Length: 612
Ligand code: ADP
Image (cartoon, rainbow, N blue to C red):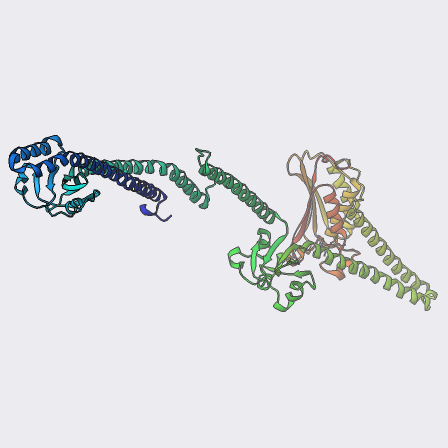
């Protein structure tokens, strides 16, 4: 924060105001006081001078009239008397008293150093006015030395006639000296008062500015984000209340911010933990928020996407996105062009417009859902229906054409009729097999397959399989061997179902192994809990490209051949469902021309919850 210069501070201003107030007050008091005192002193002084002059004038009446009459006889005596009266009777320090006759001639003066004026005429205005009988004569004069003096002249009357005058000149220097002393006391008093005021001002303003400074410091800290600061409230005055209000405000602010932060965190954690991708854009379609899932789905980095146009991010054409942004349509299916085609994603994007009553369209939220699995299922369902129709159509067409041929006359040829009916029966049996397989699969799909597990001896089971196929094996000159690990014992399984799996695997092995081939049926313990049963041949094998889909329903490597062998293309998928229902897994390894090995695992003990 900017430093404040001392003279701009409240402290300095308070001190200056205090000092000025005291100065003005003292000045006013001083002026009023000294003026009043000076006036009172001057009035007193002139009163006492007037009184003395008046007394002297009364006293002098006899002298001056006697002096006039008896001058020739007792001149010297009268003058001496006069001098004695003037100089001794009234002793006013520093004052000169002159006795003046009717002609204005100075008869006597109290001032020894001024004896030279005796006999001379005093021409002062006051003297003249007194000789004219005017009694109120006084004035303040400034002599050649610059000294202020009070002048008083009183007429001396005898029998109603003015016979002379008394003239007094008294110095005012003592009075002014006293006034100066008082002034000096006042000035020093003022200075002391000012010094004390300044000192008190510093202390007093300190008590005001310190809490203000403290609050300022805390406010700065709060502004910088530190909400743990609290102002110490030391008093219950306005500043104390400001401090309390500040603390209250800080607490509320802290609560509001933490609530805000919590909301933000909640939102962020919802967004980042959502299983759906979320992208938010501004009003012109630029990406402002993208969550973790959306980044993963689109395989983009946040910094590369923020600010980019949504069409670019979703890989849509600008025109294509218009109906969604304008709310005419809400969901689109997107297939982002990323990575290899194998893990291609299908996304469903749901567009929601953000409307604000006052601002109109402020943005769009796009929710991305991974619908790959759903789409795949949908596709396989469609394929399945097509396959079933096709699989049923072929034998039905065959049967129909043979029946027509019989109808057209073949019936008359017993040998031909026998052959045609044989074909029709074969096709019907194939259809029955197909429908049975389909029913079987549908039971697994709807979890309606009933399993009755019991402890089955693996060696017995495998030997029985080999026995069942012994005729076919011999016919095709294929050698079969059974290899079972010692101590494998019994396994909990549904014998009929597992027999179906084994029959399928062995029959496949026989079907796809040329004469003179070799089939190995084996069982081994993987660990205490699992056994693995395998059927291996050295037949024609399966090309690599088909391995991925070999367990799919109706999938056949060589359709014509499979069909000619009586296969429905459902054997392996049923086998997988049965193994899955037992809690195990099935796998197929094969190399074209080398042979095939199909193996499945089974838990030795039935797991809790599984049907026994
Ligand atoms: P199918 O009824 O046609 O035998 P499966 O589901 O049992 O149907 O088998 C699917 C396809 O897998 C077969 O059509 C065949 O092409 C291939 N196949 C299965 N087992 C073998 C094997 N042991 N050797 C070679 N190809 C096999």
